[in-house]
Amino acid sequence: MVQINNLTFFKIPLKKFKKLAAAILGKEKNPDIDLSITFLGKKEMARLNRKYLKRKGATDVLSFFSLPSESFWPEKYAGSSEVAICPAKIIENARKFKCRPEKEMLRVFIHGLLHILGYDHKNLREKKTMLKKEDKYFPLS
Image 1 (cartoon, helix red, strand yellow):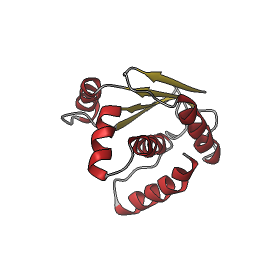
Image 2 (cartoon, helix red, strand yellow):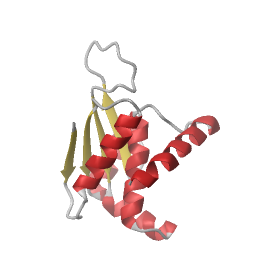
Image 3 (cartoon, one colour):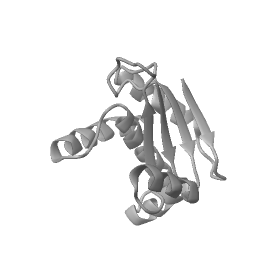
Image 4 (cartoon, one colour):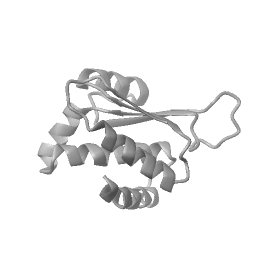
């Protein structure tokens, strides 16, 4: 199930995000993950970034997942998962990268969802794998 919470004044194409999430989860063989996508303002995103990553300021996307208590599942099969997205930060990034904000928002969402599915970019090999997956799923958006 995919649930979307827009806590900002930005207009978000909800159906597009739900469709993209379902497509990626299906292709990654994780269709049953409960996923929440939340759109937040810069102030709230900065608070979460500081609390969970010990980093200052707002970021474009954060991924959270939790395992059911006493779970025997590996991390990538999260019990409930959330991708938090900051549209205001994405608009800033889109200007910097000279791209459309809508495309940047979808790219950032794909990145966050891949983190929930167990992908990371802590070393060069992982980074290449994750970037390849992002490129694979971006045309679906």
